Image (cartoon, rainbow, N blue to C red; front, side, top):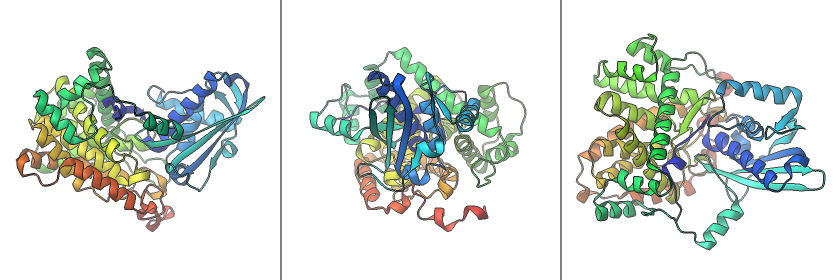
Length: 473
């Protein structure tokens, strides 16, 4: 049984994609770690990366090559000043050399040393092989980016399965039925079970600080997106809409900080149309920041990063003005646990499962968390997640130009609205009358993913990606 922490499901990183940007970035960091552990870094004179499958087909649109260069440079996606990204990339391209691990300078021609192979490796569709050439030998490792910024090595995964490594959580959970059993047995809410698991790994102060760092990153991301106008990079000429929606709703007065901005929103009109617009505005803002290589929180992926913060913001500024840090932490812990159930029982990778694995999962996470925040029982929390995913089953991933823009940005607004609706339906549901348990939806999602044509799994080989020509945009 795999231990998956809330902080595995909610990671801080740089856009536009958790599987195609953050994953390769982390893989580059791991490869540098291997070279250091084997005392090969100082003698390395060339590094080459071969990309396979979805990484090779849509990697350029997802900035995979840029992420690899940043990772090899030793930059950390959680903390790198986003304004320095262009400076680092331009220096590597212009000088045709890279400061490997920020320690040694070696030749590097990104056109020759990052190879986009239009073929798939058998283990996973997001494969990448790193090769380091030293004075005496060649060292190589193949990594797989399996969604949500998670990176694995096939040999290690198989070894772990063979050894049947047990989860050290006091309440190990693979399925929703196990989560519900613990809640009943311990007379605890979902977030309380999650909290006990997290405390087995971290102190209460660490949990508090990390959860608030995640929320503050989400809030800042929404704030930046709502106050930035213009056109997104990439060639589709997509105009940022969060700025215009925000301006029409509240104007563009200067705000001291994101929290003062949030307080102003709490005082605005809350008719149904305005609520729809606010939720959409919050979701759009995050994914517009994501599409421009900004800092976001994978929730559970970058492509679906707008759903959870927009629904949480809805709860804070529309539903419960008295809510504070405790409610925020409980919301995030509940969302993280539901996401982990999907990761273990299905997938959170669009390259493996289509967009149902990203927007569908994020909508289920947000629905469950909102239901919990609004007083739902543990059974109703899982019902909310089930409803949200049930109505995303089969959703394809067909990004135009391999960019996380069309239809990805708008899909975050749809996922957020569905999450709110699912939570409300769940709160009116008697769990005794539920016909479809969450575990059944998780397994159905995985079966749907396996049946889905690869054309609709983040390869840009079908759907909107081929019916819409970039030159017409």
